[in-house]
Length: 310
Image (tube, rainbow, N blue to C red):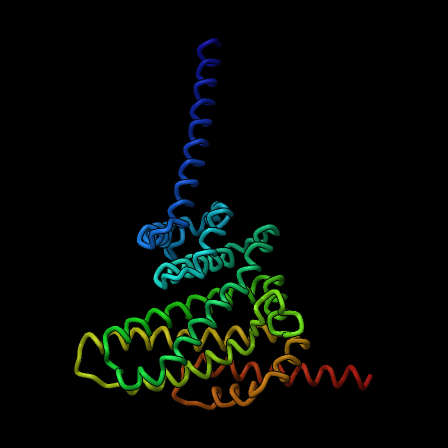
């Protein structure tokens, strides 16, 4: 009996030591994610991306998203706006994969829903910065289509846009509070705290700029193998971005009359949707989601007319 009692006490000490080790590890990781040296931040984020945030992680099926500490998630969220674009891209990829895991696990933790809903504005803000940079550099880049540094930067920008849009899709589709954030940032009268980010205008910009870049890269022929490989990668990110932008709009509009009215009030909204829908050079999934926006708007309008008639 005495031996058994002593064993229990020993076990208790080990548990305390393990908790202390976990706290130390967490604190160390937070310091690395927030480190002043971008190489240290990049190494920490890359390590996370290839382990607990990996899409093929075996722990995904074991409610892995619930095990990730909230302070770690918040530190990663801060890095989405990192001045180093590679660090920002990794941070966005980690959070996008985390949201994908949450969706697969059907995780309805209210505290986490509230926290992740606030990410919507962050992703939109970073998305806007990337699109603005692409537009500003578009004229000069046209004269340097195969310049390695230009292509490298463009690849990183479209990778960042793709990750942001993937995350926005997951948020809009699975988190009602995030959808509310999406609507709030669209209604300019209520965006004083969100730097006047207009969600709808942001996604329209992706469709417009993305279409131009997609068609340009699709027709960009070169004998430079390295340039051709980079262009193919850009084309992939570009294609995914177009699909996610259309998907986010389609999902957000579902049974959302107030948002549809905001869309209608947004300059050029339906023109861009129709042009995207009928452009045969664009990905079929993108065009289908745009067609879905039109059908959804029609159904909402019909339902409102019926309600008024009754």
